[in-house]
Amino acid sequence: MVSRWIPVDIDVRNIGPGIALIQSGDDFRIEGLDAEGKIVTRLGFASSTALPSQEETVVRFLLENVDVETFFSEHRNDGEFKAWIPYSDINGSQFVNARIHAAWFKSEGEWAYHRIDYFRRDEEEPFAIVVFDAAVVSR
Image (cartoon, rainbow, N blue to C red; front, side, top):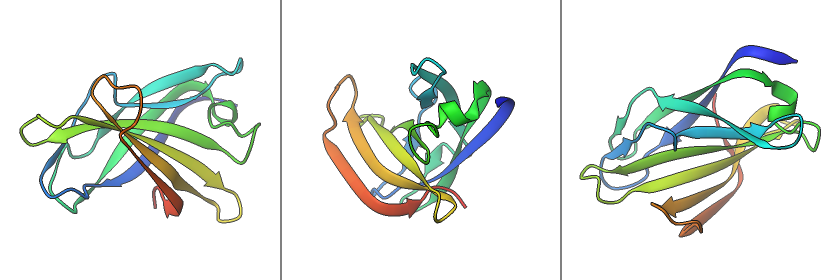
């Protein structure tokens, strides 16, 4: 089913000691698949871009004119997607791009974080990887 607009909301928390500034632009995106199996992206935004330590915000991606089942890879498994959320410290000197890999747990009826890869600016390999058993993406 090709949808006109489907919102995808993800709860994120600043677990660092200082204020995190969530960046906007082309790096702030969600990735899924098209009918040919190629990666397609849609841009996103945060409800709050300055996030104090231990505070949460919602990041939203709007899926426009995509086949939802194909975008979320439901033909290969229960479902999955990747979201890229770029942020920096308050001074802008420590830029990080977090790639969240989320999976659909049909038995639980919810999306959950599977892993988060952390990248520094212009680096292709993550400097840190966090793997979860299951952490709820959004309420």
